[in-house]
Length: 188
Image 1: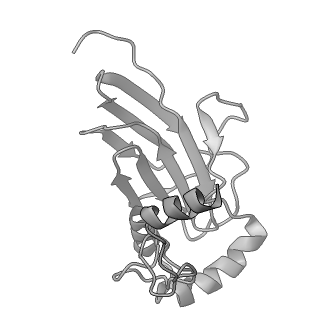
Image 2: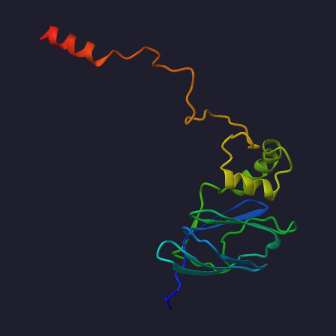
Image 3: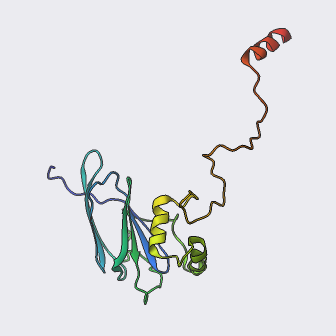
């Protein structure tokens, strides 16, 4: 490894009443060093084919519970689910302490729920997840995508378009190419 300057990885975030989702977007980071502290997240890792060095310290808007927070390492990203203290479930206006716009930080609109929606979600989470909607269930849904596979806790409300169906709208057999050529020769 050379003495190259560390880069800042792209980060996206979202939140709910009880948790904050932070996704660090680095590809192929084999052994990341992630330290979740009550007031900050510290990340260091070497990633990609070029073995680029990434470092980042995020001073959090409010305190979290590191012992109840979870980390999941994927091929293209590292997902962190920060558990808010039970006494502090208000929404954060920013991920960081400073009211500053960072070029590397964006909102994850796929996971974002407004404060009003989270009340409905917490009631629905218990029924959909088959439990109390705890952080381990949320993390397992993020890893597996929650797409209605055999072991999934979320029912498959839609159809899985990757699995062939018995009911096909094109049930007629296609004519052979020889038949088509002979028909066009007769019509000419």
